[in-house]
Image 1 (cartoon, rainbow, N blue to C red):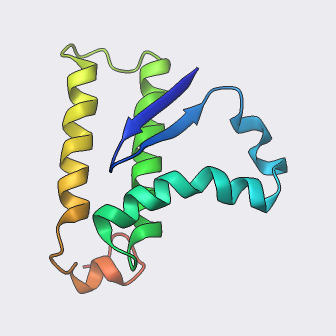
Image 2 (cartoon, rainbow, N blue to C red):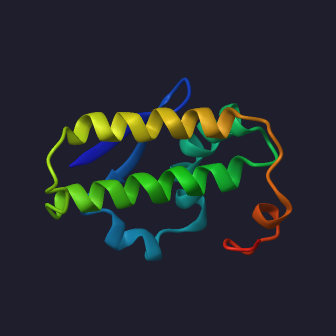
Length: 113
């Protein structure tokens, strides 16, 4: 199974079930090629300076969402596809927002005041 989303102009493959077990053995060049589409999309939205952080945010969010869906963890009702689209749309807007983050958000400490 493969999960693809469109964050910027190009579709980005986020998860290929069955491939993740081999990631720790993959050569760095292969990881660079695999990361390139999400990094490009993140760069389009967040800019050069924040591209890596944006790519990590989207990858972590989507992976968690997908894992919860595959595990049957969304049992409160509602439309899961709509929820995914809602989250992705809000993430796009947040990443494209050029408002500077607060000092705590930039400190490297996720929960800093």
